[in-house]
Length: 157
Image 1 (cartoon, one colour):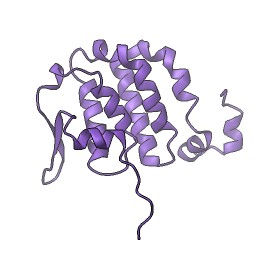
Image 2: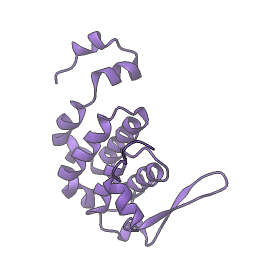
Image 3: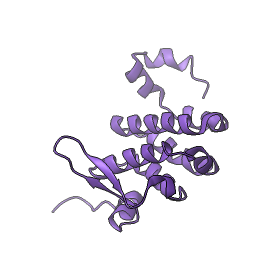
Image 4: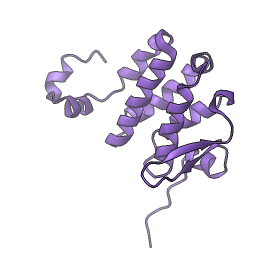
């Protein structure tokens, strides 16, 4: 008798149905994604949002596919024009990763935020308050070596 069954996440369900237009290619040393069509030609809505939601995954291959897919889409020519209209939907997905208790998920969320910022530039500024105030002070204290009580003095949450 195992514990209660955990419902499959949205990302895992979409990936399992084949609705993510890329697949993981296992290399002998390094994994990579193989896209069904060139990433420049792919519509970002809803794919980029689904990949951002997948940053919260904790199981392989979902962690790799979501992380690499999010990064690769944001690196294509014209990514800013495709991503800027989706910021209001991307921010909650990134915020959920940033408040996750798993340090690997937090790191993927933080990397995703950096990649999104590089892609869309100042268009992200209006959303930063919602993202950065959600970063746990205790997580920052662990990562940066601050004492939680010392960090609280700097947190304007």
